[in-house]
Image (cartoon, rainbow, N blue to C red; front, side):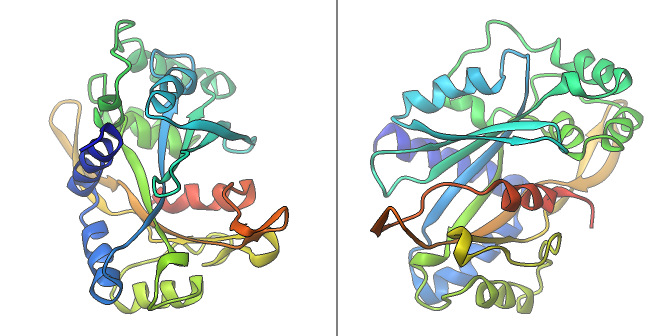
Length: 269
């Protein structure tokens, strides 16, 4: 077993611990399609910390990936990179970070109180991507204060470093051929889907269509053993179209307009 295979096995195991719906959705398609191919996986982190995007990139590159493209999300105060592996059987990676300096002083102070606890000697190894929080649990009030300004920041403060979502490759399904068919099947099975910007984000003209479930919910212990149920992780679906620059190859990048709405899959529904 190579290190990339081990990486995804460990990542999937951690993901299912806080997103049990993913196993059920996975099985929904596995029963009709056998192997369910993962298009990409996504991660969140804080800028200006020992686990910033640039730090995490060194780990991603060590797994054989190369940076594919970069993205900006001004309204959400994020930047991101996508990565692609020379082995087209290996999922793509989308990694983003919160530009904390663009938040209010109050939110910056709360986040810094916890990210200052991250050791500068944190080992830059694949295990980082399922390592969870590197800081103490925030208080519920602090979570709520950050949430009012940045859902992304509150999610990360509470849950730490881990896969935000895995993604079913619709192109590899035999039972469903469109995003609409996939989402209909998911809804019929009792799962809620993200309707921000419409259930299906993107278009054939954009070369990429995406949809997703809404995040699972789980009770998390905040500071002082204070339990609260919050959104955790979700499952995405992506259909890619032939790249006009290479008709024999599917488009492999991402679209900022799509991703902007997919981020909202972790909003409280």
